[in-house]
Image 1 (cartoon, rainbow, N blue to C red):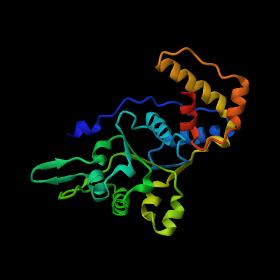
Image 2: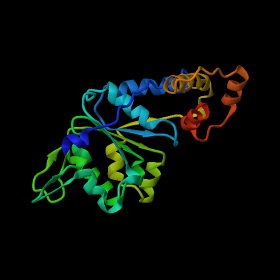
Image 3: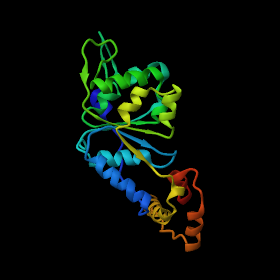
Image 4: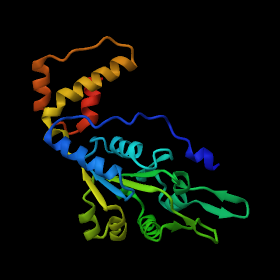
Amino acid sequence: ENEGLRRQLPHVSAEPIGGSRAMQALKAQLERAAGADAPVLIHGEPGTGKETLARWLHARGGRRSGPFVRVAASTLPRAQAAAALFGSEDARGVVYGLLDAAQGGLLFLDGIEALEAAAQHDLAAALEARHFTRSGAATAVAIDLRVVAASSADLAAAAHAGSFDPGLLYQLDVLPLRVPPLRERPDDVSELVAYFTDQFAARDNLPYRRFSTAAQNRLRQHAWPGNLRELRNLVQ
């Protein structure tokens, strides 16, 4: 069961793309964060590629040989969120949780603001103590993993308003990373267009398509409310 939880889909950890000043600053932060083992909190608008950055950190970190386990907080059932994270144990055996699956590797908590309140509190306590206890178990399990969380919300404001656990924020916001939206780095659009064009041409066995200079200028002027996801879909 534990080995089954550790399975993951193949994923290429792409280099963050862009030579703009904003991206150069982000790359420098990523390089420093990759060499550490502290928790990382990635903040950025929807579609800015937060999971890709988390995978890049994992691929260059000291736990790269361990699993990368992605948890979309919004998909965890409210009543069973804690059980999904920590697992359970009874006379019939052990049901391993997501923290078990990520042991030795990286746990990526995507959309952490959507995690149920009680689970937020329990996770904060576990991260502080560096161990967790499965539901129904008598003994604790040491935590041996790196945590990277991502959010599109203002977690500091949410904690101040009482809708996000301050303790969890303190545990996660050790190495904060802000991902700039695409509208703040229009100089990267042409490079991104070329990257996505090559990607789809190779993947779908299509001839290479060239975007004219006029088309690229038009794309650089667009506000990109959907960020990289919108650009990728447009190129496709």
